[in-house]
Each structure stands twice: as structure tokens, then as C-alpha cells.
Image 1: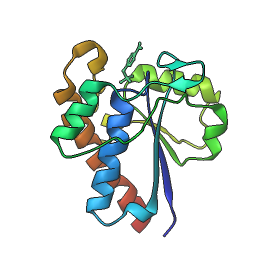
Image 2 (image 1 turned 135 degrees about the horizontal axis):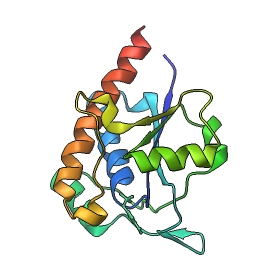
Image 3 (image 1 turned 180 degrees about the vertical axis):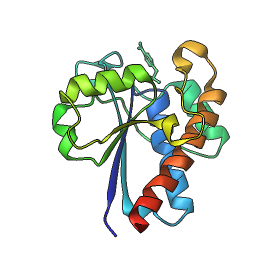
Length: 160
Ligand code: 4NP
């Protein structure tokens, strides 16, 4: 069975995509599948990167992760690069604007690698940006649901 390399992507890489990175890492570890994945996260913008140095995870995102026993270590924001396209199998955006921006950075998606997280669930839609809504609990709930469905889809694909 091969490695699956997943890049979670949002606008700033300080709220939703780092939450997804560390939630997904925890889910795969609990399922005993950590060694089958490379998991990272990045931003479509440079809003949280100053002179090449990315900001840390938003304190409220960090607190929400901690509430669920998760740590986000020394994660700092980085921007998604065109050269990442060949290095990962899946690019998982949090909302429709992310998908548009990811496709702009890559100049297309010839291998069909770009997907929206909540499209793996039955309800679809966007992960609302808690940077604006301040609902980090809602973001956690949606991201956990999306990540669980994403893992199921990847494992099912690997069995085929
Ligand atoms: P994120 O949230 O995309 O979930 O990391 C945001 C973080 C920063 C900004 C916007 C959204 N910003 O404009 O700086």
C-alpha cells in the first residue's frame, strides 16, 4: 500500500488548514495508519507571512485543538507553491474561494487533485472562516467531520 500525501489549504494557514492538519494527523494515528500519510497545510495568501516568516497558529485555534487534547507544535504559516502540485496527491481546500485560489496558483488541476473538504461529507458546503465568525468550535466540528469522511474515502480507494 502506497503513501498518500495530503496538503490542507486555507486563506491564511493560521486557523482552518492547521486545524485540519492536526485533526487529520490524530485521526490517522488513532487508526494505526500514521505511517501511510504525509500531512501538511498551507495558505493561498501571504496575509500571515512576514519577510518569509509565517505566523503561529491563531491562539483560539490552538485553544480549540487543546480542548480536544491536540497540540499543533511549532506550526507556522507557509504559502502554497506551484511546485507543490507534483509533491502531494490531494489538495484539500476549506471553502470555494480556496479552491479558486488553489487552481490559480497551480494554473489548473490536470490530475484531479484539488477538492473541498466538506464535499467528502453528505452535506457539502464550506468550512466557515473562524477568523471572521469567531466560531472555532463550529470550525472544529466541521473539520473533524470532513477529515473523518476524507480518511474513509482514501482508505476505500486504497482497497480497490
Ligand atoms: P484561515 O483564516 O484562512 O482559516 O487561516 C484566516 C486567517 C487570516 C486571514 C484570513 C483568514 N487574514 O486575512 O489575515
